[in-house]
Length: 226
Ligand code: TIU
Figure: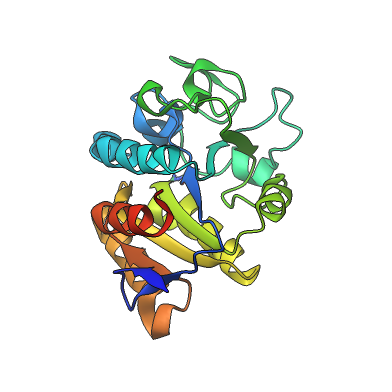
C-alpha cells in the first residue's frame, strides 16, 4: 500500500479509499483587513502567505478528480444560530452581525464571508457554512463524507489551532484518519500553530498526521493518478 511521508509516521493511502480535502474557512473575514480576524485584534497578513500552497493542494485534488470541501464560518442573517456567548465574547470593535467594511461580520452571503477570490470553489466542489469552530457541528459534513465512503481526510485552512484543530478532533472521534497539510494552514500566532501540530502528532498521532504539501501531492499522484 502507498503512503504519504508524514509525521509521526507514514500515512497509509489504501488504493480503494479516496481521500477528501477539507479546506477550512479561507474566507475574507479571516484573511483580509476589516473582517472578523482583524476585529479580534489579529495581524491578518500572516495568513496570506499560505494562499499559493492551499491553491496548489486544491489543484492537485481537482486534477485527480478527488473531492474538495470548502467551509466558511458563517451565521444566518437573523443570528439565530449564533449563541450570545459567542457574539458578546471579547473586547471587539466589531461583533458578529455588525456592519463592517466588508458587510456584516461573519454573516452568510456578505462580501466578507466569501472565500478569497484565489480559492473560489468550482462546480462539483462542496461549500459548507458552519456556525461553530468545528466543521461537523450543525452542518451536513457527515452526510457528504458518508456519500463518498471515505475514511481519509486531509485538512488545510485557518486558523490551525481554532477551526482546523477543532474540526480534526471532531473527525478523529468519528473514525477518520486525519492529516494536516502543514504549509497549507496558518495561525495568527506562529507559536500556537507549532503547539497545535505537536498536540496533533504526539502520542503516536493521537489526533492525526502532518505532512508538507509537496509530499502530499506527490503521494496522491502516485496512488490515484491514471
Ligand atoms: N479567531 C481564530 O483564530 N479563528 C476563528 O475564529 N475561526 C477560525 O479559525 N476559522
